[in-house]
Every structure is written in structure tokens, then in C-alpha cells.
Amino acid sequence: MKRLTLLSLVSLLILMAAVPVYADKPGTGSVDFEDDWLVFDCADYTDYDFEVWDNNVGRFTWTEYYDKNGNIVWYEFRAKGVDHVYNKRSPDHFAEGPFVNTCHRCREVPDEPGWWIGVWTGVDWNIQLPGEGAVYHVSGFDEEKWYGDFGNQVIQLKRAGLDKMDYEALCRYLAE
Image (cartoon, rainbow, N blue to C red; front, side):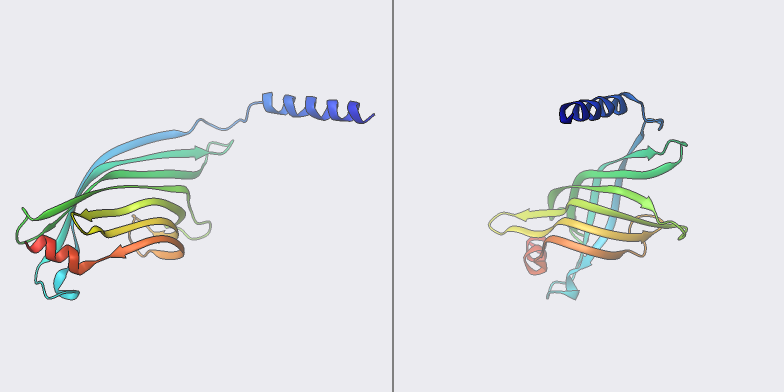
């Protein structure tokens, strides 16, 4: 009897796997980007008096996942590229490092129009200098809630990872 029950259960599971899920295939998209923005002012952390700017260049991709009614249920976002941090007064003084991060299961918050929630993993910053190693590095896991476009009104819900920001070493390097 045990074998018959097990055989019936296995047959049922195989049949269930063969039945298609009536959801639309995921949609995808991508866009190349280049942004130039102020990261920090050395004067706020050191005796150096110049701004550190970042010209980051990369590619942003996304996948949209749908339910069986064709409604978007959640997204996966990915940003990958290179940060080019530089002394605003002397742009030829710069350092570079790669970044790549992914937002898993990003979705709009029910009953809170405009708000999003998601789990980000990856490397946000990875600026390494000769003889210093990582001087500006942020990587790990973040669960965040944000409003509208990325970076607006971010609320960090959980954080685990490595954060290293040696402002003195980076400003000294960019000043030379």
C-alpha cells in the first residue's frame, strides 16, 4: 500500500510539473548610463579643500515578472559599470573601480503609491589605491524602501556587509 501511495504521489507531482503556469514570460530591458555627480567634499572630512566627483558609466538592466493575469508582480534590477572618482579642480587626478549590484524581488509597496521595496546585493563602490588597498568600498546586502526614482528618500531596513571609507587616503591621493 505504501508503494502504491508513493507511486500515486510521484505521478501527481510529475503531472503538476507538466501543467504550464499561465503567466506571461518575463519582460526585459536595458539602458546605458553616464552620470557625473558630487560624492563628498574633502573639506568635510580632511584638511584638503576640493570636491570629489564621480563619473560613473555603466549599463542598467531589468526583468519584469508577471502573474497569470499579466500584472507585474516584481522586478529584478541590475547596475554594472565603473566609477571614475576625481578631484573636481584637477580632473586628471582620479581613481577608478568597478561596481555591480542587483535588486532582487523589487516591487511597489501595496497601499503606498510611489514607494518601492527591495533587497540589493553586490558592490556599490570599490575604489582601491596602490599601496593602500580598498579606500572607498561598500558591498554586501541592503534591504531598502525608497520613494520614486532610486536614491530619493531611502529608508534602510537591514544592512550587512563591508563599508570602508578612508576619506583621508582618497583625498590625499586625488590631491597629488
